[in-house]
Length: 300
Ligand SMILES: O=C(O)CCC(=O)C(=O)O
Ligand SMILES: [Fe+2]
Image (cartoon, rainbow, N blue to C red; front, side, top):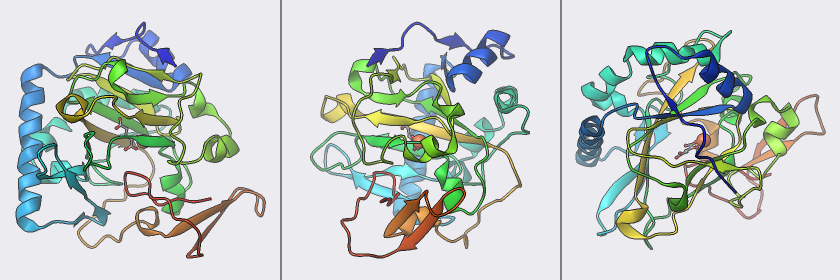
């Protein structure tokens, strides 16, 4: 495992050539202090207010995307994965219009990018905590791209922009990425590792020393995972907002949007041999089911 401490960047008004080159080569980039400590606190309060609203309304699903409920250290209910969070918070919605995101669109060039506030899963908030009651404390290896396949579209480049709301030094676990895998071929995109099942570290992976307020960006085609914290309780808490920067036809979600296959299927079989690309077989055969942390149910 590599401790990736040597390359962090400061976000200025525009991306430097060095930053663009770094991202293109490695498929990720880490900016320090994208937002100030005060803003981190404000965003956490906003997220708590959204959570309270979901509790009051007993919201289980937003625009077809299930919310993931769990337990905090003290046994109280929490939401561990939110979707479309900014639709419930003016402050977060305003933040998504920050002009710095326009600058980040350059990372998608030559594609025209946009912040997908109302598309895909919208503004996602992940809240990890390591307690006996929380099952959401890690995430196995995956790329974010096959979701497009399950939605019937071809894979288009996208950026997953993570705004970190808790300190998370490398030793505490957190995001791990496999540099350069964003340029891999289609077979490796699907089969380099077992989606969400494989939690093992990789010799080539790198991790980060994250401070609250930092921003990480990864290409949706990059292999990544979340390493479980070695700590339990408060020290293991990790909250990250994910802002999707996407391209392609505008496909907003709404209250009547159906739940994508990848959130509800009993089994998905990927068979690379029977067709030119890949055949997705959706079925309900009697095999052991694996339920990965963020609601994906994937077996192949
Ligand atoms: O929590 C993270 O940093 C990564 C989450 C992730 O990869 C995902 O939700 O797809
Ligand atoms: Fe991911």
